[in-house]
Image (cartoon, rainbow, N blue to C red; front, side, top):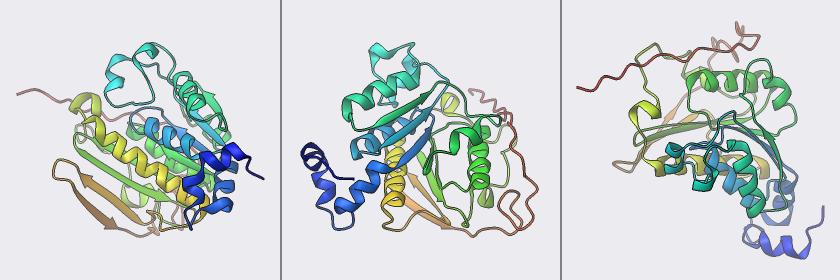
Length: 268
């Protein structure tokens, strides 16, 4: 494709980068990225991917905007209360960059629709906030041979990794859903809003690096940070031969929906 004058100006700071240039920007404009969840992680990821010029953004979320979202879900504004999150996000993306086509899916990402939704995208961002969705996204992407970025945040902490076909997946390090009362959710334990922004922008950067084919992705590495101390730590791991979904003899060969583990936090 040939960039027009407005696009050359809009993406000039990308084009100036030796590792991006015109050819890299053309790849971005032709790319298709799916964002599952337009909340704390999906919101900043969507904003940066739209600004970067990703040609097609798929966004799937079944929720509506509520007041408690506004502390961290920066794509939604106060007038968007009670509006479908995907509609709110689509409107902001259009304002940021008219180059971007948005496929807004007001639904949940579930076993029965996952493979059909994934099939048209080059890269997937897990912006969900619960373990059933995260394991389903991992399993679906592994089966569909789709690269994806995992992200998770809680309180002052964040973690992320990237899977590409043939490398370690989320289950290689986290075998199965945690037991009940092991991990609370953000709605139970809280989160510093900026933490979601830190993690979501890392996920957007991973997607863009994959698209242009430059840099080292977070494959076989779990990047963790504690923003209270502003310390980052990396844990390296390997593709596990006994992994239930990507191992030598996978036992998970069909998608299924999981139940959210219960975590009962009692105030002392």
